[in-house]
Image (cartoon, rainbow, N blue to C red; front, side):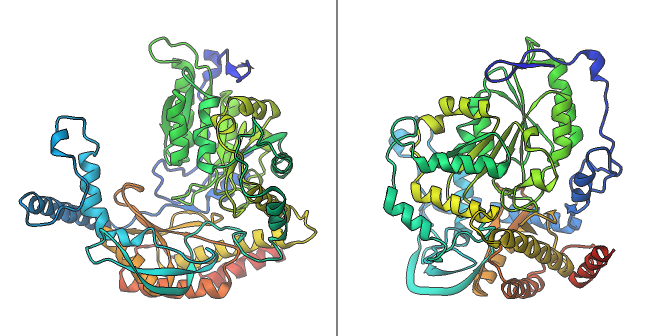
Length: 554
């Protein structure tokens, strides 16, 4: 198969003789992603196999799933009862509703969305959007608020909760900081350039600091070229439509972020979803796409694009990059890698999953990432071959229509990137990368030891604790806040209905004392709320350290 054209359209396809099924044989692989993956090494995947032996998705006891459905059933029944009371006038109707004179128009509100918001979400709304009134670092201050009408409205009490430990922000390397010495260059750039650009880069908003950042980013990632954007979400949603369109096929992981999904839908391409991190499912779709071609006409697809993430932000799992690259090469497809949560957070020197798996960055056609997490700033980037980046400079909506990145934000990104690369003359950056890795392993090991069910890879700083039942989700969040621990809880529809969870994000700025304090309160809350559902036995942190010391000694 060959690639031609400005966009690299696929012009020819594999012959039938080349389509002999050569499945990647993985000993013990389970299509159900609810078991620990143990794989036999195959050529070129030794690192991948080692990494995914450390990735688990344990299933809870059956009674937990049953009680979760019962819990949702009870609150749904009470929701219908309250709707009836509102209808007959026995309960005040607080939610927005359609006007009587507009009853024959298309409704602005969907029935289910309205029902879920007014009867389920409103009961627990105090667990989200809590106002923070200080630097959102490893600890912060929160404004106390109360509700007099069951969470329909809030009022501030004037009190402040001080020194709340923050384990919910994705400040992976701790660069969201206010150290005056570290931020001196940012202050200097603010005085030199100001705060806003007020123009697109294609008009008169292209500053020297933008080009300097793009050159540094390409060097950091080990690619030919890169370009930056002012918004991370738009980096996906506005660039994917420029890369693919009608007549193209997108193969998307089922757990991809909303920005990837939106970009795929806006592109007009045909979208097919493969099971999360399941190489058998992906290869089957690749084969079917090449053999069958486009619907009805059966013409070859103009392009086939595989879209995956480096670290999945709700599962904490890591992409199986070596195997995906092997399939991409085998079937002559393209690969789009979203490293929003992995760049800076994994790899020996923070270069992301390509470094973690020792994959050549040139094997990834489009590398995407954001500056909102490891770099403590805002915006995103696209990186890869120079011709791809140059094409996007002219055809990407984010490049043509969006305002250019704020100069102090660009300087903050460069400051953090130079620190990671050691270009600032210190070892602070690599120290933070290693500290994050140590904090991640320690926190995960201790949670497993306590008996919590957690998802994801041992190297992932995203650590979901499964809570399952809707009542336990809100009780857990409120209990932890009372103990001055700020957590992020997530439930349906952001997760499957039976897999509500609390998402912890580790940071290099977390000290061991902070983590021990969080773990102590987690242990007590887990016992009080009966959240320790794991039936597996894991080694203690001290045993893991002894094993690592023994391996290093040999």
